[in-house]
Structures are given as structure tokens and as C-alpha cells.
Image (cartoon, rainbow, N blue to C red; front, top):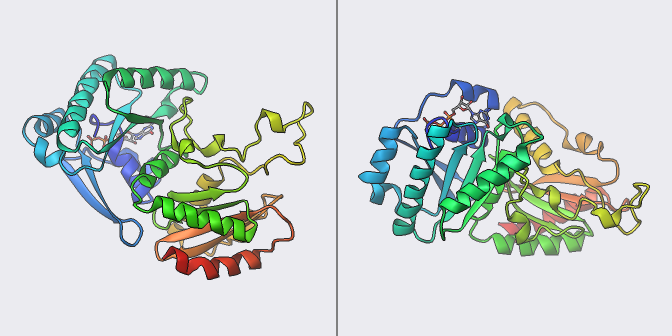
Length: 327
Ligand code: GTP
């Protein structure tokens, strides 16, 4: 949901149809509701309703079709265009509160996510301030409804991170997956294992020995640059000496945007059908070994180890043996 031009269809096509951000400029306005289905994991079907945001449609959803649009909703994503004009902003808030009221009535258990979108149009020096102000305005308009807010843009990895977190909440056995991954990481003496969905390359489960990708890490950050980069794999102040050297027992330093980079590369690889060697690319990360393998029909697993004695072949063998636990 969200006003016309806020970017709903664009994000859908970037995430679910592998379109490049550039091509979204040619998208026309969505007429009424565009429904699409995506098989997400073998037994999870994602039904996406992209509701055209022109006023006539919004009025229809909210005045006449409430029980059709807002019933049986598991998750509502409301998209705000951060660059919207003042007049449009007021109207947008009115629609937003109407949508929340309708959801409360017809799908009281639905999770609500709000995307403050097109953050790329805000100068990077003001991004944090603008995000926080908008987030506060949203909280003021949400009364007692719990919402989770992300700053996003189709032009960078923020969209991918937000959608990974959104979709993660829909995976019915997410905790089982995480438990299996925890055991797997320990058994391999790895530092991290991550499961990606194959079509979208969204992250659906992860486990880390060095850091703690706990549930709290899924919460939106306050800086508009939502992401996993706050996780403990990035050395905190305590881990770094005054001269910038890491302590020997500090957690291993892995690139903070590694998941987005991997996702991007695999997507391009899938699109181009070219012969891409993941292993070659991983070598660029000097201090660890990473192995990416198909895990199930719908997922890839990425395993990262920092101990130089752990060879990629051993990780591959472990993945092979663990597959039946993840089916
Ligand atoms: P309706 O279908 O009318 O409800 O609109 P919509 O919300 O689906 O908007 P749409 O996806 O068609 O996007 C409108 C315009 O916004 C397009 O020209 C997109 O290229 C642009 N756009 C989408 N996301 C972003 C973004 O993150 N940043 C910038 N700068 N432009 C974006």
C-alpha cells in the first residue's frame, strides 16, 4: 500500500523479478490491484497484492472493498515516498491511518512494516535526521499499532535488507532453521552460515558464532541505513586498539555488506547465464574461506570459516551431509 508513485511496483520488480533499478522508470501506474504469487521455499507461497495508489483506487479500498482488501492479511507494507510534497504527505498520512484501522479490524494479527522509500533522494549528510523525523511522525500516526520502519531505496542494498527482514517474519519454521544452522556452524567450526532463497536471493535464516544475529538484530535501526552491519561481526570500539589494530580475540572482521554483495553477484550470474566462479570472488576476502552451495530446491547455503585449517572441500562435504536436515 502507499500513494501513487511511492515506488511499490518498482520494489516488487527489483526484488521478485530481478529487474534493474533503471528499468523501473518505464513502469506505468498500477491499475487497481495487481496480484502475483511467488513460491518461496517449497511449501511457502507468497501472495503479493500490489495495490495501485491513485486516489480513486485508495478510496475504493478504504470505503467499499475493505473486507476484500484487508481480510486474511499476514503482513502489510506501507510505502512512503520521502520526496513527496507537503500536501501529498498529509493525504498520505490520512490513507495510512485508514489502512491501519482497516487492518486492525479485518486482520488484527497482521504485522505492519513501513518503508520510508527513495532515501537516495535525501543527501547522505541529512539522511539520518530525515529518517528519524519521519519515523517519529509515523509512530505519532500509528497510535497503539506496533510498526517496524525501514529506510529504503531501489538504488542500494537497503531494499534487499528490509525485504529480507520482512520475508523472514513469514517463514513458518524460521526458528527450526536457525537451530539447525547453529548446530551446523558449530559442527563445521565455521563462524557463520546463511540461507538464501534462490529466486530472490533474500536472506531467510542465519547463524553466527562470532556475532549474534539474534532476533533483536532484525529490528529496524535508527539511522535509516537499516542493516546487518551492526551485528557483532563488525568489531566494536572495544575490539580495536587506539592504533586501529584489532585485538587477537576480537571477532573476525567480515565485510558488512557481504550478503548483499553475494546476492547481487548470484542474481547477475543467474540473469546472464554466464559461468561464474563464486570461489574466485571469495578469494578477495583475504582472511576467510566461504563456500556457497545449493542446499535445497529453493535455497542456497553460504558457510564462512576463518580457521585456515578448514578447507572448502570439508565445508562442502559437511553441507552435503547436512542437506537432509534442511529438506
Ligand atoms: P502506483 O502504481 O501508481 O501505485 O505507483 P507505485 O507506487 O507502484 O510507483 P512506481 O513503482 O511505479 O514508481 C514510481 C517512480 O518512482 C518510478 O519512476 C521509479 O523509477 C521511481 N522510484 C521507485 N523507487 C525509487 C527509489 O528508491 N528512488 C528513486 N529515486 N526513485 C524511485
